[in-house]
Length: 402
Image (cartoon, rainbow, N blue to C red):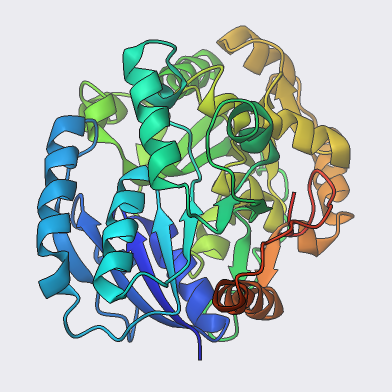
């Protein structure tokens, strides 16, 4: 059985839980270790007791660097009772530093996989800060055997032209886990609201975009009750002046708290008609390149995604002929797209989604097993000193090499 040490930047992140479930389902034995940025009991995984290396906070980079340094100094004792892993996966740059320290602790022959699902704006700066961070990434990642990322645009715009990471990239999209005994049934087919009832837009997941919050509030007020906005997930409170107060004062907006992924997806998407698949958090950079979790979740459950022109999400939807695209990031554009919506046009939009291959949205047990086999192959190649060669693939392949 493949032994994996998974180093995560936030043990309370639902995406870390989902990746751990993926690896365990695929047949790996996972030791999870990392930092905690907040409480989230919904991120717990039966049978996996994480090793906490300290606490960190969103946006406090100096504090996070200090936490990484302290964790590196204590890592040998923290991992004293952990069997030597066959593979180490480092989620994000700060964990890559810990991965290299862990390799030294375990004897210097453990291959490292770098998992990078967001490109922070600091990495893209052209000043000394950006150059220093990219140099650090290149140095820490010089021996990385594989790069896992979730969007082709990250490779196209960052890893190939800018980053010094030379490992072959593998596209592992943010698909919905469909695992026996874990995932809930598919949501009931989406239907138009009853007369007098509102259309509902669901914005679920990592809630960190002030501009999206303001835009949805303005639009819902303009529609005067014809549209309601439902928020669920984990707000990044550091990015809002007063998230809870703002939502409380909006007449057509409500926050329903965190949820378990994938267990609760059918219920929460079954309540809405549209998926907000837009993010202006790092506009023109990471937010334009990412393919968010909610894109796959909403489409899996037949809800119509709303995207922004010029983004990778819009390109993804265009290839499949589905979804709605805003021309401009304002309430007028939302009004143009949604204001004159009819029952027939909505039915047509959902029907186009239903014609898509379910594999576009779902990561199955067989996919989990295939991923673990690919990771296991790295350990053989490392022992035999065989270079990894990425195989050719399509822009949006099913979790293969780019």
